Image (cartoon, rainbow over all chains, first blue to last red; front, side, top):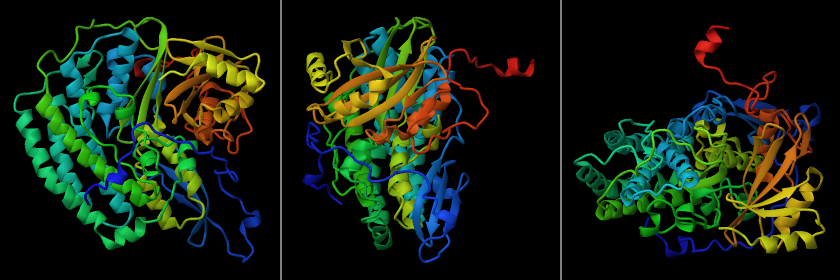
Length: 402
Length: 153
């Protein structure tokens, strides 16, 4: 699939739609009296999860079904709740990344980056140019790795199998690269306030270039394998439609929002790291169905490859971190910094009281907002389609439950 | 991006909210609201010409004396952010804003359980992340303990 020029989001997210007006309670079970409707079919309450392969973690979906049709749904979360926001109140600023890693465990670099950025904002630290470029580079590498997990498991939700193995093959290469750079495969703790932990290791340039060269071929293979599959297409076209107003009303961000026809991307509209200097397009679709979300994410991976090449070519010389004290004590105040994680806008809101630990840290979990909209649009669809819809918005429960 | 303070003030004044304070801080533009006029204020902001139709986030902060709830709103058409802040006494209640911003449905439940507040007007006001019987977790007076401290108790 080549990119359709109409699919590119226009600069300046011009959205002038009316507000979302809920027609009825968008959540919860309908609770039909005595469990029986007009044609006396019993409504069945089905528990999906918390341990179920289609829930991408420990999500419990309580579905009230009339035959094959969902008439009410409720999302029960909290099975992975570790109290990250409270734990952050007892961590020093340069250790916040460890907690962010364990929030969204498939895209740790982005969480660390948001925590580092908000600390730098409070302390007014000037980050060296090279650190900005490394952050963008590793962010995009992590984005492909995260999208590959989504791609593999989304296919599983729709009943396909092979693509998961191909996705993991490529993800393994990426995790090797991330391990070579940060020392860990998933819990990186690589981005620190002031810059990054260490310089890029020798030889990583060739390794990354070799990867993106082969991935150029593999991404088309992936797209053909799943997107070219007729069964998959009929499972996703027109399924799980989230219209523009619902998307805005429920606070959807990232690829999900762009698939519903709102062109907002933090990387482009509020540039951070080195994204201002990178040339990339923001893919967008207007249909808002599962296919649109699939197409947008596949195109995002192609754009990430482009950005990785640009980062490797344009990587400046210099320091990889600014000179920062061992113990950071930001002045009392508040700040908010946001990054575009693979799941959407990951923002960290930090309140400092001048001590060496945050007074309060709140992070915005983009997948929580995506989960709410799934709950709202699920009634009326078939159970099988509900699973596909939940898979298409890319949920990571570690991030939702915190 | 930061909105114009005078424009927001005049928009709120024309909507009949005369006592609202709008201030420029290091975080951004913060609108301070009384609990009673919160719903009116949020719908005025949503329907104003600035079109704050998008709720980015909702969270609470325990200041030591009371709980401050912040509504982080965004105008996608103008690319501007504004914060609405309201204060709630401990064990007191706050109104649900889900009819104005459906995005608030789950974060509101989280604020209510994590700070031990009552939530009114919500379609499903259950606890979100923790089980019944646990004391509120994000309050300042609740200490977290290390494994060693728990073992020695």
